[in-house]
Length: 395
Image 1 (cartoon, rainbow, N blue to C red):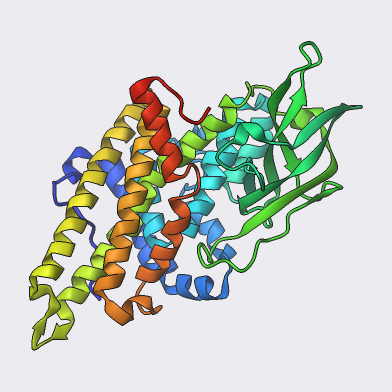
Image 2: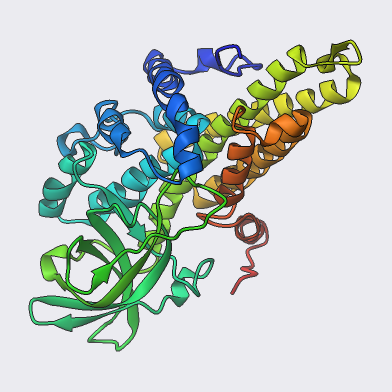
């Protein structure tokens, strides 16, 4: 199989800065040489290869866009997106691990935490010494996070948390969980959403791993159980302002996903193209048949359109102009086309498409989850529908 050299049909590379190209190429090389040789074993045996964590940290992958004073790399949002693209070309589980660490754990501490919390947690998280997870989704409250039943009540010196969270990436291996819970406002008697930093080993806190997955197998997925867990006052995020705060974290993650799934789509397109040129049927390469060429043409078209979406989304984010609806459009579109491309590539490879010799079926199964998490396809459809009409169909 020929080495992957990228997909750039519309000559997007010249629109990137030299730093952005260098970061992409560095991560691409690492994925090619270091991660791809080990991912199939990790996927088959259902574990996340923790040995790569220090290497990811040394590349500045954790909290990459955060300021250097807090351990971040201070790179552009476009450079971060390109890195996510290359990581997910390796595996969605790899990109998920990095996304959760940076966008869902380090970001809320940076955005809503105290200066003391930032200085305590962010540098070791950037070094990969502290692993984080994000506890928002509950067993009965996925697309409607405002319906959460996890509660915090005031106690001497802090709070006591009770509830459960579900589908939590890295939960079992995490040292720190960003947990969202409802707390009654003493003045208004109304429930308000607050964020808490729950440390591993806290009495009453456990994170059993969710097994028997057919998707994201090279990733740790967990439940978080909170049974009268005490959280000291200094572990409450003081800058949180209701449900909008965790939703802002989701926007950060969805941005990375929009870029990331492009990597999976490119991997499948690359495999399908090389296979079409070398697989001989009826005395000639299957790439010479019109039906196969049509599939490849559609894949190339959708990847190119998604690349342009991501590039402009990144530039808008760097200018401080990006909106949640714009991120929803990119997440919705790119997850859909990536999954479609993976399915077409699987079909093109025939029976070979289901074997671990090729990464296509692994990407296809992973993308079924990625299309669902951080807002399902249908929920992002309704977000865009509300933007167009001004009417929220889900309320």
